[in-house]
Length: 492
Ligand code: SAM
Ligand code: SF4
Image 1 (cartoon, rainbow, N blue to C red):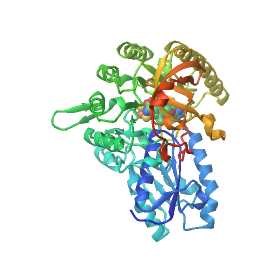
Image 2 (image 1 turned 60 degrees about the vertical axis):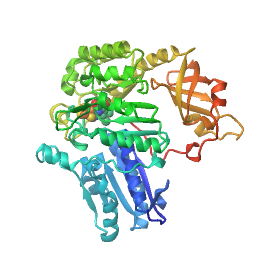
Image 3 (image 1 turned 90 degrees about the vertical axis):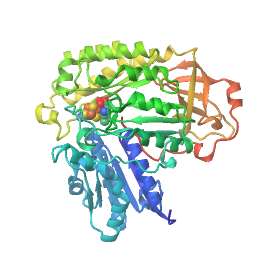
Image 4 (image 1 turned 90 degrees about the horizontal axis):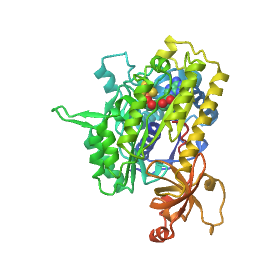
């Protein structure tokens, strides 16, 4: 690694894929001698890793780029880049809106960033690196234009050193009519299981205890070895289960129709696998699901939910919903309300439909639900979900849970404590429930047993057993002390 004082600033919005991509881009730039800065004004390279799922995310990025353009005007040697989903979707529009942008790099081309930065510095010419559109060529060629980007990992970029995302799959082939992801992330491709297991071992060597396997439809993961052997997600997590030092395995996001019994049984039987499934249903109305092209009916989803709860006793399930999708009548929406009431999700992420150019929904169906109706439906659904979340949380009072301690709670990050005061920490249970509790920083990164004493709709409140804290020896290494998140995580 070369040493210099070149700096890079990165702003990340969007899903876990983007968080991971930013970690990897920064690791690659560090090899080129860059260090990370929190200040765009001081950075030699300013990157925006972007999301296109909803229009608001794109507009926020355009505004954020507009705010840093002043730094580039002052110092034309700075390199300004828009990377990720929006770069792939918007292409030259990015430079139409902000002509001072030097780099437009899609999700499938991120490995080229260090080289492209050098090219901009040498030539002062803007650089584009984009993958093919889904209809631009045959499947093989389009697949090849989206590289899975998984080089060296950089623990410093992770919110905590003991947790990491691991990509098991890129792209998506479901083509839900509202969604840009199949275009921005390309065809579905599963990574070789040997690579994934190797990566998990490297992460464990770096101090990682929990991996979250990520894919747009992670449970459709299947690697075809070409000799008749196929590795399914259940096989992969069984292999990862054998990695010494790894304590927890999670996976997101699941597609309802691909929830097979072998996977549910693996979740049930493998003790390191978190008993939590994120399986978005999107709507409780069959007609809406059909227009969304979700490939299942409400009854099929409910059958999957019953099967999951039967095969994995105690499993927590969460969902995503889109309200105000094209043609969603009040009656359709009430069906969604009923589904949420009955399904008892641990939590739900609720989004107002946002029309995205280039999608089938934008071509076929008018965005005909007024904004104020979308807002009202969003609030109504949230109220039902919040009541269910509170009831779910209250049922934990009096129970003991095992929690991986993640760091200071949000409240504690905001307040300045007396050095002697015991901070409030946060962690997650094996069912992905968030617990806050008072304990010294040295337990961050450890797994503790907590007694749950109270609950709100958002969190459980726990008390650490004294013998557990005494049992955790040593002080937290500097990387485990609370630090500001360098990468903004906003939406799902
Ligand atoms: N692959 C995952 C799946 O199938 O559930 C999720 C991917 S998507 C990035 C995350 C969530 O964003 C979706 O589950 C959906 O609820 C929401 N979403 C996607 N496109 C949207 C749109 N055009 N408007 C509003 N919400 C959208
Ligand atoms: Fe988008 Fe549907 Fe693929 Fe999820 S499954 S990424 S919602 S197209």
